[in-house]
Image (cartoon, rainbow, N blue to C red; front, side, top):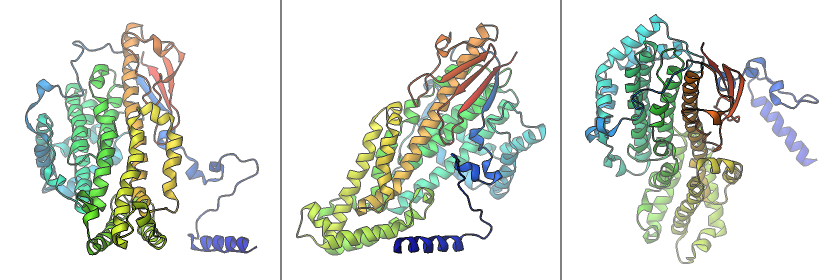
Length: 503
């Protein structure tokens, strides 16, 4: 009865604290989907739940075969350091005297641009003129960026590497934001070239875009944040290719897409190893050197610094991934560990001070926890995703009340790790799908516009497998000129592509 009353009180508090205009969802008898109780506006399918309709024109592979490449050939690169030159482009972008006006202009352009999944919609002449004026205003930035991305070396920014604590995190977040801004310029440049049938110029912009994705991955520290930005930039370029291949006169981009080294761009392993290094440098900068050599006074200061850093980290630009209230959870875990004397027992040092024991226990614990996560990323993507339910169940324990301070610190980054895996799978799968579409265009060009009955009959160019499963995409030909490619449902990923060959 007490439990029932407490439940009623909590429900009453929740109802009174909710906005008065909020709707109450009811579960009807025989109902199987909660969406049936949602307001009509929330029942509307999200953009990625709507089938993507693509109208393709038959196109043979280019001659020579590598006439177009999305990856800049080594022979076209010049001696020099990419990072310092890209940094120059960033400074030019940020210090543009019309920065505020240009940002407003871009917002207007972005809202008017056709959806990349909406078919071969070409921007209106008025919109193209807006894009052209916008790009001309930033021509110096683009020229510097194209030059920088054709240099041959990506040397680490040691000024970033030498930082620690929240300075390291803030520097990485700022870099990510700036590189995405540059990627937007390349996307607009590519979109305009595609709309005007300037395919060589479009490929030039694509080359710079994919190289910028590599730079984003390796600029400073390779971490989950840097990999997510890199994947976002690669995804932007992939969608530009998807727009291009729907135009009647577009060249076949099969080998151009195949030239992009997916293992370098899409493998999360290095980013996660960097994350393990970065999280300790950000939240516990003292762990670089012997934690067991600190005295009680130093450990007390470090413990206070850890709590402060966790609070700042949780309220930073990554707060969407961070469970709340993280700082309270950490303090509670530290208090329980202190009262139970767990830290001294587990590190096996009965003589250490309270703060010394807690700092050493937390430091070694976070290292061990992150390594438990990292081990799964030694598996190939398709094998790892096949065990995704097991990994997710294991990661979910960090959402409950933590058993140790190390689990609290781990909870700061584990949701981002899950987001990273989803982004890797989504981007790599889309890349493989685009290559398969180009293989279909090549087949249609040699078979009077007809599509193959199955993907294993594709000639002269083979279909690529679904990288998330290691198996062929699920393909169904409905008639000679129409087919459907279906993909297992996943948030943010279209589950159906409807293909039509233009007659």
